[in-house]
Amino acid sequence: MSDVCDLFSGSPFVFRVSAQPDASKVRVSGPGVEHGILACFQSRFIVETRGAGAGQLMVRIRGPKGAFQVEMYRDSQKDRTILCRFDPTETGLYIIHVKWSNVDVPGSPFHVHIVDTQQELEQVLKEESYSSNTLPSSRGYSQWREEF
Image 1 (cartoon, helix red, strand yellow):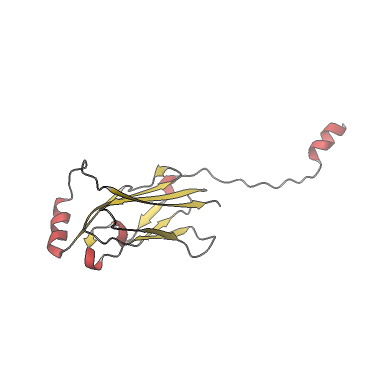
Image 2 (cartoon, helix red, strand yellow):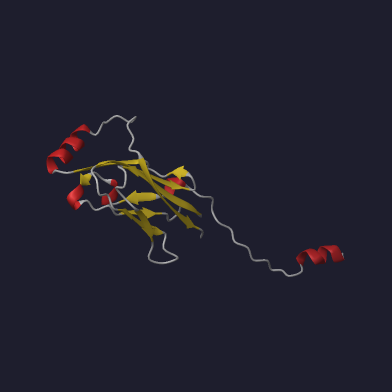
């Protein structure tokens, strides 16, 4: 009988239970994941992880060499909204991968064309189909770990 009592000594036991990561619940929005003109491009975008369970956010951007720096931050420790931005300095194609615990979130990868003029932007919007085998050469990489 004492063996059974020993099993329960120290009870009640407190432990944390969390949901498995679910990348399909992550939402990405904002001007930084849309085509734009370099001179007025707003590179910020929001990653909302509410309902996605505990996990790790990874943002990887491929674009023209030296064209960006990835930044990620949030307002408070309990906030499930991560604000992201990059600072492109060159025109070209930017491919933005957003992953939650190594799984692409809906819409990822985002293909963003940054151009010099309104006319070029209109042309990109008309064509929207471009060769998928021509990828820019440099890489930017940031990670964010969420454990709730």
